[in-house]
Structure formats: C-alpha cells, structure tokens
Length: 390
Image (cartoon, rainbow, N blue to C red):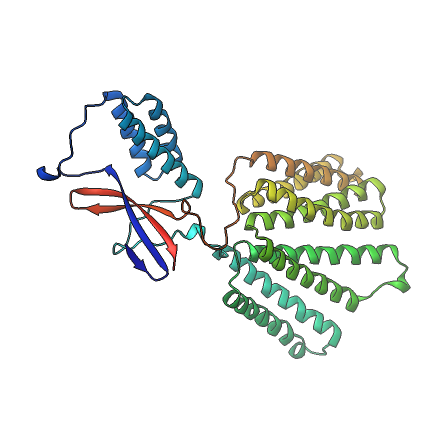
C-alpha cells in the first residue's frame, strides 16, 4: 500500500506469470496438468495483447478461450482476464510504468478542463476583451490613436486575467471552458442576426446605429458565455458536446439564411430565418450531443465538411454559370453544398471515438482500477492499483 499525496493505492497482484527467471524451488507451485498446445498458444497471444495495453482485443481473445478451456481452472483464469480487460477497455485505461513504486490516479477520470479547452478559452477571452474595448471607443469617440488603442488592450488583458482567476478559484469542470466559448459565439451570432434583420426591414430613420448595434452584440455574447458556463457546470458536458452545440447553431443559421435568401430574394426574410434557426440548431445540437457524445475532433471534421461543401458547390455553380450567375442562385447552391457537406462528414465520422462526461466525486471501484507493470524478484509482475481519495 502506497500513500501518494491524496491518492491511496492498494496493489493487488493478479498472478499473471511474466517471469524472466525461474522461481525458487521451495516456492514452486504445484504443477498442473499440461494444457493443450493450441489453447496455451492462444492464451499467450491474449496475454501479450493485454500486456501491450490493447485491452479491447485482449478481452475478445480471452472470451474465445473461455469456451475452449480444457479444464475448470483454465476457464476461470480466462474468464477473470476477460472481465478485467473489458473493464479497463471501457474505462479508457492505459498501462503506465510506476515511478518510485508509486501509482497515480488516472488523469482520464479527472473532471477537469483540458489544456486544449483552456487555451481556446484564453484566446477567445482576449478577442472578447478587444471587442469590448472597441465598443467603448465607439461610445467615447476618441480623437487620436493614443486614446483609442489603450481601451481594447486593457480590456483584453482584463479578460485574460478573469479567465485565470475563474480557472484557479472555481476549477472549471471538463467541457465547461468549451461550453463558455460555444455560448459566447452563439450569443454573438444571435446579436448579429437580429441586428441585421432589424436594419434590413426597418426604414432608415428607425435604424439603431453603430453604438446600439455594437453594444447589443457585446451584451448577447456576454449572456451566451455566462449561460454556457452555468449550464456546463451544473449539468456536466464534454468539449465535443459543447462544440457540437455551437456548430449546430452556426450551421443551422447559415444554411437557413442562405437557402431562404436564394429562394425568396428578400434579405429580411433570410436574416429572420437565420436568427430563428440559430436557436433551433443550438437546441438540436444539445440533444444530438447527449445522444452521440462526439469528440471535439469529430465536430471539427463536421465543420470542415460544411465549409468544404459550401465552397465546392457554390464555386462550381459560379464557375459553370460564369457571367449569368445570379446572387439568388449562388446562395441556393451554397446552402445545398453546406447541407451535403455536413451530412457527408457526419456519416463519415460516425465511427470516431466518443467522449463521455467525467463523473464528479468518487469513482466506482472498477473506474479506480489502475493496471500497471512492476518489477518482481523473479521477473515482472502485472498488478492492479486501486486508487481512492483521502
């Protein structure tokens, strides 16, 4: 038993022989009847797969050995190895060489934001601060660069500092940082869509003007970021689910806006459709994310598919029609291309890895199993650590 900070590890030896040398004669176990050569060879292959860290493949090999076992002890051994490998494969465990005979709890189980998430949040916080400073400049109407440049820079630094303070004081959960970013962009897109719709269908005398428009976009973005962080913290999420919510909102608004613009030729109808479908897409993204729980890599491929499809079909239409191409036709072709690209990329990536939310609090016994390889006096031993918080 090793005590390493807040981790208590109980090491349980599984009696899987990896002996590099012969054990002492007085400690030799009773010799069992020799098993058939074929079964022994298959068992060796399954054990090799397990020791290589390929637990899923090892579980399948041990499962085949259970039915083909020549005797009850062999059947029991194969069944135990199969159950262990299935547990480790489902939990996403990897083999790790212990340092100084101390076992650490798997980082994969930590309900904590990833480095990729927090880097994206920092980047967008700086952009948010720059825009907030620009909004202040719009209101104050500075007369020189010396008075116009400092506000964006100061707000950018303050935004980055706020993220650092939030991350260290609240300790953002897994997926929450990405949820904040997705909420921010949904709010910004919402503000842009409604502002453009209002400006498109209102007479010139009723237009809001630069101050009102920039302020509204900043406000909706702020509300979206706060709402995303609260929902992600309370209900739990993953980077992939949060990213899918943002992408579904964006592509729903883009497809609806371009399609309705191409069909009707009226900008106000197109923008209103885009604003409405943006909200519907966000809801659809939440529901789809809970169902398929995609990784953030899959969502990025889906985004690439939508972008590529829109550019490809829209570009081909423009090239084919040449000077006879119309704006309405280009919008329609682009919307159809984006739809085709999104559907195609969704289907092509359906076999990619999933990403489930991390559990808060104590992990189950099976989740706290940590397989590893450790040296022994007569060779090498395969051990399992049971990590628990103190």
